Amino acid sequence: MTQQLTTSNNQKVLGKRNYRVVLVHPSAGVNGRGGSEIFALELSRRLSAYFQVELLSGSTCGSFSYPSGGISRVEAHRLSRHPLIAPLLQRIATHPDILIEHLTNFLPCAWRLLRHPADLIFPCNDYGGLAMAAFVRSLIGTPILFTEHVGLIGGGKSLRRNLRFQPDHLVVFSETVAELVRMRSPQKVSVIPNGVDLDKFTPQGTRIDFGLPTPVILCVASLQCQNHKRLELAMQAVARLPQGSLVVCGDGPDRGYFQTLGEELLGERFAIRSFPYEEMPSVYRGADAFTLPSLDEPFGLAYVEAMASGLPVVATDDEMRRYIIGDAGILCDVTQPDIYAEALAKVLRGDWGRPRQQALRFSWDTVTSNYRDLILETIEQSQHK
Image (cartoon, rainbow, N blue to C red; front, side, top):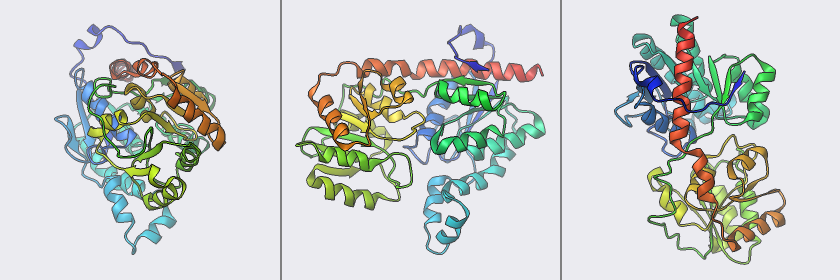
């Protein structure tokens, strides 16, 4: 059954604050730029107004957090690149850092939840947390709420795998994914978008000066060749513009590759910069437009952060981007460099007053209210089984 949730009366939860809700993300507090990590932190902080919330995190990141005790994927990434063990790990898994995080956090998180039972478990770190939550549920019956962050990347392989764990309620970002879930299983599923902090990401405030020829086009993405971000397409398109620069904000194992490619295509009109997440509002304000040519991006928090900061967006023309961006930018066939470049030139020439208004649809206040109601519903349905 697909549910589109709406905000209910606050009185519904005033008497339910004793419910204990445990979110799980062993990289939260360690990786400040990851979308799922930001999601876990922001939602934990806001749900604390309604429930007793605990976030099993990678490090202390608030009064609600409790270090999980295992190895985060950030720490595991450093370990997995050691020349003595890297070849072995690469034969075992495509993403050994994530596998290490999942394996080393399974028992510590399960033990914490068995010793201090929750009324609901909310894993946010994909299949590792979901498997751990399913193990705890099999022993003491704790219901599971799970948000599918990967969506249809890789043809929906991760989604199909995660459905096998049968969370008590599944949240997805789009109706298309919800329809696919409904076709495959009798899974309870709701559509709730990701959220943005509209007080933090605003057009007004300090701006980063990148020291590059203007106008500046910003792209925010992890620097990995084997992902869905397709940064090369953005570089090729900006290289076709007579003026302007491309700033890629991010980091990753293939930074050197992208640095070399960007310099070859754009010369002094290109830079890769890394900033703490706390400085990202100033980063967005320092740009004139935003672009990210991802394929099958499940949601794309950076699009919403950019729009909240007043930037027009150029992105892949697909269903999710039409829903998120609307008329706050231009969607096009980004695989055609000339078409992509013309779209960038057009947003730089235009007067775009819609981006901030479009971002208002994704307020964390609304998103939190929807999760609050769904958590209550899931707990109460579990108690009546």
